[in-house]
Structures are given as C-alpha cells and as structure tokens.
Length: 364
Image (cartoon, rainbow, N blue to C red; front, side):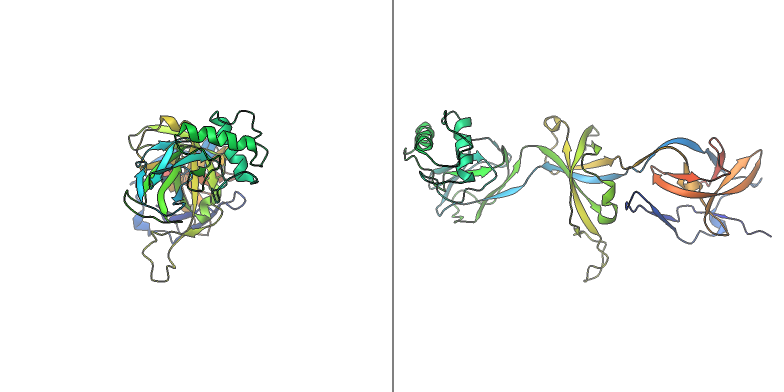
C-alpha cells in the first residue's frame, strides 16, 4: 500500500538567503498523519487555485522613527555652561547652540570640525567653510569661497559678523566661537546642564540632522533583500502610511544586542546590519521621535510565475515537494520545484501543473 504524502502544516522552514537571488529551502520532519484534516470523502478540507502573476519577496520589519546623522558636540574650552539650547530645538546657520562663561557658540555649516582658531594667514578646508558661511550670511560679499586662504577680506567679513552680534571686532574666529555641522541641526538631548563645567572635549549636547528617517535592523543573512534606492512603505503608529527609499545598508554586521536568550558566550545572538530609510516627504511626518513604525520592503519580484499558498505544499514520501491537485472529485499528487517565497505564497514549477488548477489546503 502506497505511503501517502503529508501536509507540511507550517513545518516548512524557509530560509531566504539572498545570495545571487536564490532561496534555499529546508524542511523539518513532516507532522504525523493525525496532524492533517481530511473530509470523509477523502478530499482536503479546502482548496485554492494555482495562480499566475507577479510574486514579490517583500517582507515587513519593525523599525524606529528618528532623525539623521546623530553626533556629539564637545566643549571647545574650559568654563561654566551658562546657557544651552533646549532639547528638540532646531538650530540653523549662525544660530546659538550653547554658551560658556556667557560666550556664545554658534552653528556654521561644514563637514570639517572647528579644530583651531582661524586668523589671517591660515589656509585650509575650515577656512573655506568659514568663508562660505560668511558669504551666505551676507557678511562676505566679494569673498572667493573656494580660496582656502584667510585674507584681509576674510578678516573684514569676520568683523562685520562680530559687529552684528555685538562682540569684540577682532577679525579672528576663536575655537570657542563656532561649531561646524553639515547642515541645520536638532538638539536631541543635552549631555550637560547649565552650571556644569564640561571641560574641553567633554560632550555638551547630542545633535541630529532635521530630516526624519527610519532605522531598522535585519539579520545579516537577509540583508541582501534590502538594496539602496529601493522604495519602501512605512506604517506610522496612527495607522497612516508614508513612502520612502532605502538610503543605506550597513556593510558591517554587529551582534543583536537583544539576543535570543543565549548563554554567556552569546552564541545564539544573530548578526545584524542597520538599514536607514529616507522618507519622501519627511516634513509631513509629525510623529514623535523614537516612535515604533513598521517598514514594508519590496524585495525581489518575479514576473508571471505560477504560485500556490505555502501551506498547500506536501512533503512527498519519496522526497521533495508537491501539491495535491483536486479534479472531478478526486485528488492526485503533483511534484513541484520551489522558487521564491513571498507574502504567504511560493513559486512552483512542474510539467503537470497549470494555472487555474485547484490544490488542497489543510484547515489551519
């Protein structure tokens, strides 16, 4: 008597390994015959059609809403903190960040940090940045922002800037006067309070960019399903959905700090990579910082393939996989080759399989 194939009933463990677009599939031991539900006439309790169409390997992951480019701002010199911008404050070019001994530190745009005082005769990228900012603020008309030399014209522009802020017109910029950052900044948190003496090199505040982003982590083995530039959907806590694109995928896998409850050696912790999503219309997202969100990844799409529900798969007695085709009140087993998995379905190919056929589904 022929041994019957068994429904997998969720015992199929699918490992989506995104190497070269392939997907490895392994199956645990099928459940016992008592695990399936069969009608009295021998037919399966439900059926579903074999469908032809596009199949996506997209998945949904949990992420966190935040702001871009987090960085620390350290005190440039000794003294007492006499004022600091409040948490959540947005600071633009020439805006106040904090004060030490009553001396204001202002934000200027640039990627090179303020590592020295700037004066006549100095040359370098930091001088270029200063000249660009003075020009943008209207104090450096006629300056060449691509000339990295601190000229007499630069000193004159600095004096105009100092006069506008009612501070001594020295024509020089002290290290304690400005802090460079790539663009407008938002104060995420204050690392020191008014009255503290943070000291040189000690953090005063943590800044971020003002653009809203989403961060999430993925198992390193699945990170290939997230590709830079791919569109995603983001579901906010209030149920609204916004769109965005993957901005970056971490190249280095780090351990999952949450872990899986492994032992002291952390052998059960999975390696993770961080993925950052840039929102298409960040200004329209008013959800608070650090709010949990759900991110829908598009993944790979196969065009015009045959697919069946994953729970229609059988583990065949002779090995491999198949489906139970239901026709004219009878059933027969058809072997299939498995392709991509996505959204509860699996791509299948087989000479005896056609679009529109009904396949058996166990009652779950």
